[in-house]
Image 1 (cartoon, rainbow, N blue to C red):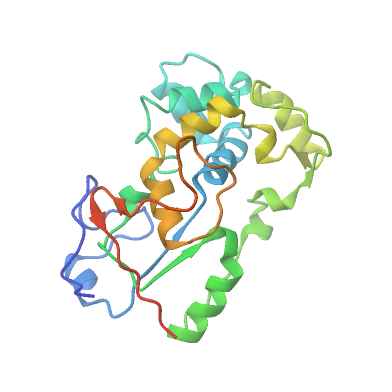
Image 2 (cartoon, rainbow, N blue to C red; image 1 turned 180 degrees about the vertical axis):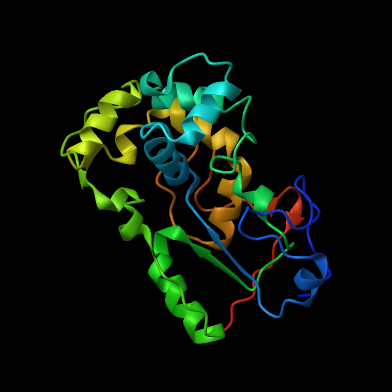
Length: 231
């Protein structure tokens, strides 16, 4: 792949996160490129649990972006999703993942759902060691016990879910989503879903309406992606 094919997107050539801002020259000279994606449904569920329920600075930023409508402690998952329509690019934690892509194509696409496999491959291919600090920071849904029921939580205020977290338990993603929310997230993150379906080839938690699981979308923003598989 020609590294000159650096993707010009809405956030510019190099701005991906606050931690990584390579120069254009560095991007063009890269000998190996990879990116890590996440199931959009899992990502937004995790964002709500980690940022909104815990009332972090991100929650208060969201509160300001939505004109101080609902206090973070009272915010439900449903309201959080509905308000994303007008604030989809308001914060990197819920901004579509395709906005952060730098290249038109990558040597490897990995996913959070199979993170241990990515760590192993990166060490083998480029000698790159990854330290998973999620257990140290207690960041991640796998740090909690699931609630053993089918009780829906889409309309439960954040402070009640926070109490469950303090007891070491959280509802599963399936307990937060109903059919309207599956459709809403599917529409908001359609480009992310298309990319994930094409390059990861792993089932999503949910299948958005009007999607044929046998034929995943072949493009993101109209650009065909050809993934090279290396032995």
